[in-house]
Image 1 (cartoon, helix red, strand yellow):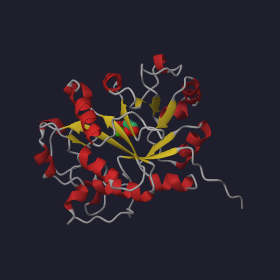
Image 2 (image 1 turned 180 degrees about the horizontal axis):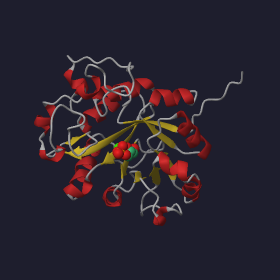
Image 3 (image 1 turned 90 degrees about the vertical axis):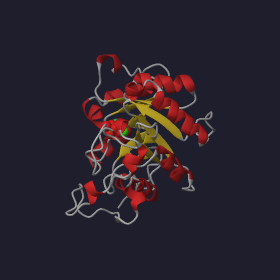
Image 4 (image 1 turned 90 degrees about the horizontal axis):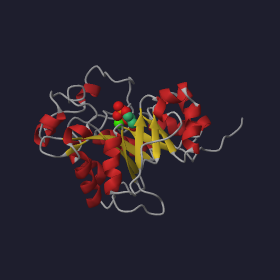
Length: 276
Ligand code: G3P
Ligand code: CA
């Protein structure tokens, strides 16, 4: 039997927390990701009607909570009254795995309540180890710069929007919107930005990204169909962070192509595959 050296050069990023096991974007999912040993946490952020940044993927809360309506039309207090866990943990269990490696404690409401970005930053600050954050701005056009302004203000309060240290910035901002990333870059040029690519339009094929953006975030589907894209990005001097990589064959593909970060719903399984 041959023993392979652990793959240390690729970062494992927990997508919406350890979201295969625990309900996405909850404190429970992020705690689990930290316990699992993830190098970084991914989260989507949206603004509530009263100006709080909350970690919610969809425009509406209908899929992931017992409530209804658009996040942008609800206040934080409205969201705090909802349960963001039972959609995944209700009886019978309706998630992807039958026996989640996580214990749901309904009595501990905070674990599955709406998660503010501020609370997530506190969790990371209290973790006692370096955990990076990949924060994605959702719906940035709806708020004309307010998402980025609030986000940078909050990061500033946690000392995370300052010029990068020798170890590199522990936070990066991701978006499908070049305009959103441009706003971030104009305000804090040292904060790394990731341009998310869902499909490879002709203007992106040669590996160029919008001005000021250092990191490319292609979907794993793009890598399957256009494996040469990674090399073109690397040649253009960009890092490559790939989403959402849940299948072992896709992890192998990412390793073969030499990507820099794997964004996954299953951080523990990916770390196991990397021998870590
Ligand atoms: O990490 C990037 C990925 O999360 C983008 O897609 O729809 O899951 O936010 P989505
Ligand atoms: Ca996302």
